[in-house]
Length: 462
Image 1 (tube, rainbow, N blue to C red):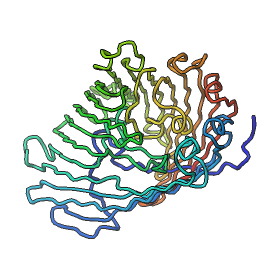
Image 2: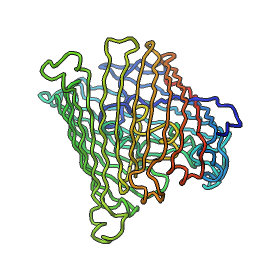
Image 3: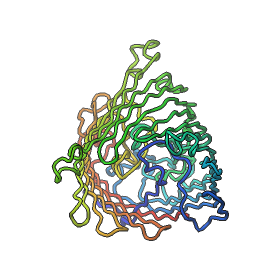
Image 4: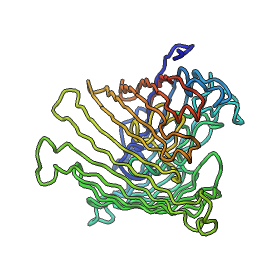
């Protein structure tokens, strides 16, 4: 194998907003937390504060695109930088009866510089310069929570919000980000845009039940005028069982998406936590999700067009937490399948490997379409502020013919990820990864070398 001409030095910090890591619904108002930039503290928990997030990342790789990045991206991709500065204002006003109004606005200055990123979004194949900078408003929303207004249904039974909101459902398998980075928006990996162009969300929660209704227009780079409306309902008993179902309808200038109906089922269970099962097996958990995309009236208009076929995707995950073992190991296995007609829509990340599958291939090459994947993941916590993830992926195409190749065997990837919460305000992550091509990857990319990759990205958040 050829060795990289440049040294591998780099890594990454994943500073996804804490709300993005929620198991549920919409990323809107942040929870009230102490802030160095809070300039008003009022009665009943009211506050106003400035916010600031700063990310800076350096990315380096060897033999990208399996040694053929020039052919695939128009220019060789060895290393590049990304930065993001996000200043904003965040407020909450709580009435004496506990109802509250909240809002937030922030601007984002995003930059990519120093080289072509591994997806080539600032390369010669697109109408951008290699050094890209972009400034615009991202989050901008207002909302109201019911407090104890509906007393028998619980505190904050109803939460209404509207504006530029990031709508997140479950772990991001289907819906997680309605804005996109890279290209003329810069900061492809960090993700400079996450919110919808506009959205309205009604969230409801009472006891173990929750649900929401949503309507949004995606802020996609292609400007397809894609709108989505629908809702979901969920039932959960913490650390025991969770069940959810959703239905969404799409309207879009993209013919593949126009009139699509989307059905979603998801659930998780700790089977031995029920009725005081075997103690050693209580940490065993299973999670699964299924999505069916109905082509709707598109199929009636042009029944022979394969682009208008129904699509489906699903996954099943088994995990076990070694609760009394040093370093708190969490071992998991996941199988995921996305058929050749599935549209991955607005998936996003809630954890390493979910749902960008692989820090090389899932970030820069493969979408969650026409893909089958195996993932084995071990998470360790040697000390409280440090978490280590070791992840293995095996990728295969769901349908080799639809992918235009003779073999369905794509590649293997190995990731090592270290996250360090240095202080309450500063985080650091380092990622090292290699990917080895199989027959399908060699056919599609024209490369046959091992792709190696390292990232370092640090972030401040106030």
